[in-house]
Length: 230
Image 1 (cartoon, rainbow, N blue to C red):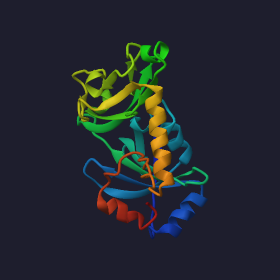
Image 2: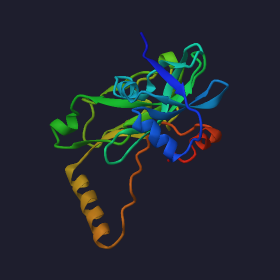
Image 3: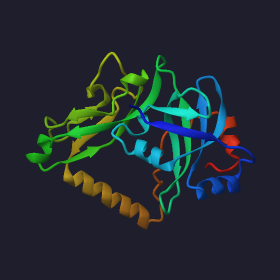
């Protein structure tokens, strides 16, 4: 049985103070949109959302969302935000989906085994892409993509074109993009030294931005929050 997330409509002003009151009551402010419906400001149970996000299929999980007296609709989590210090969920974007229409989702790449280049040549397995974007029907979304890397020798490269392919999914990444490769330890060391030299010279390293979920909610859905979102 799919998880049923009960979404309670929010009324009144949609500002930071209103969002804080929702969280103080033990709920999470959220926006529900998609499938031809107007965006609706709602509140949901954080325990249900966390259970979905930490499941095997994670943010690609398809579940039922129940809004008021409406019939339950299929939905997915497309964006979520956490409070940086306590790591608590503070906002969720839910999107209604149609089971007969393709979706664009990011799927985790899981590397299996120890490469020959690590075992016999002392190399290091470096995974460049931990997720890849694909397009498929909701029912065909894989929980992850398993790839056997035991055959990779030193300096071998695993590319998107080497990932499991089927007629049900379409890769949206460049087929020649590097997913993982086996590099020499000296290359790793040289890269670390170069980074340290750059930092010492006063050249700040460009920060890595960790993106969670999608941010393709309509502009009016973002405005509905009135500043509660990022």
